[in-house]
Length: 284
Ligand SMILES: C[S@@+](CC[C@H](N)C(=O)[O-])C[C@H]1O[C@@H](n2cnc3c(N)ncnc32)[C@H](O)[C@@H]1O
Image 1 (tube, rainbow, N blue to C red):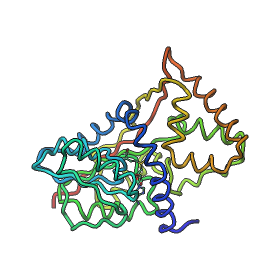
Image 2 (image 1 turned 30 degrees about the vertical axis):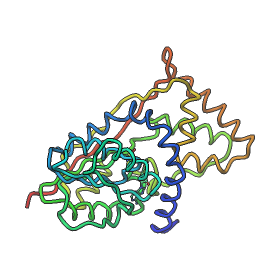
Image 3 (image 1 turned 90 degrees about the vertical axis):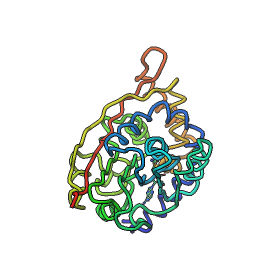
Image 4 (image 1 turned 60 degrees about the vertical axis):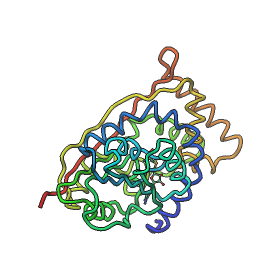
């Protein structure tokens, strides 16, 4: 079992490695995932003038939309382990003239901020990778002002997210994979209903809402899906790195064939299920 420090170092290396891929597929994220940013901004009740923290901002989501909403009289700080992801985020903020949106390298489990210094905390697809989620949520509660909101998105179960389940199922036909440890950090660590909500409550952040938010993401072709997966999905890349060249080719063929089952007219349409959770720090 890796130590928290080892998990964090592994995450840093993984996400730095795929940063160029996230930059390359940025249009895909805009097309397919922006509605999740809007949902988080709404759940966190963001308004002009607020100071907002985005945990695990990666290449800038949802920090940049938050920056748009809070405006220049507010500010947004995005924190992430991976400098190379943040370099992409900072470039985008600069291109948009968003000088009130900044990015800072750091660990979400040990926030380098004063107590009660943010009006809201938002996070998309980061919390399940943390080795010590309850500790991170306590620190999140510390930096929130009384009455401040939290809104976070994490992945729901693999059955409802074929973009990960299908590749894993195909890889499992090629090499044996140990059953995933439900407590280990990873894409589906917070998939279970009530898990994140319960942990937020344990950190002194009573729940406002939890929803399994269902949607579709689209790709021009199954090959486009495969190529984007290999560029952006650090955990799948790690599995691929254990395969021989022949096994990789077999996995690629298998994944493309399986994903073609999701063709609808001229596109590949994959369902996704995102768990969206909101909480609020008590006013006093
Ligand atoms: C799947 S990406 C999501 C990025 C972005 N929020 C988005 O939705 O496009 C996960 C991000 O979480 C970051 N991350 C993982 N563990 C972290 C930690 N302990 N502290 C801060 N960031 C972390 C990774 O570096 C990576 O950029």
